[in-house]
Length: 132
Image (cartoon, rainbow, N blue to C red):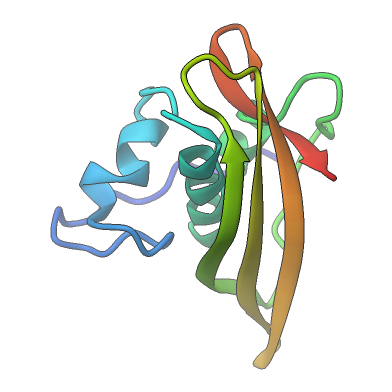
């Protein structure tokens, strides 16, 4: 089932990824601007999960590894992102990694998803490949 695009936010709203205002951060990527590097893409994907924008999550997943659909878990709410480390992803790199912790609540209970993700360039844009 396709999810709707995130609701517009006031330009002063803090982005769910924790880096600046929504309009100047992940909001730009949802409008079509390519991610500058794997960390920016990781942050925008976290925000997409937090905003229930599964279309963006699927669109930014490499075609060889992406699922047919992504659905939100009922009762789960993504609350905070910590980027621990990132590597590669420079102007001349074809790959990059991001080590992160995504905090959530599920039915009111806190939890953490920890992953070191691999990102690759595909058709000139950064996309999520999967966990390392």
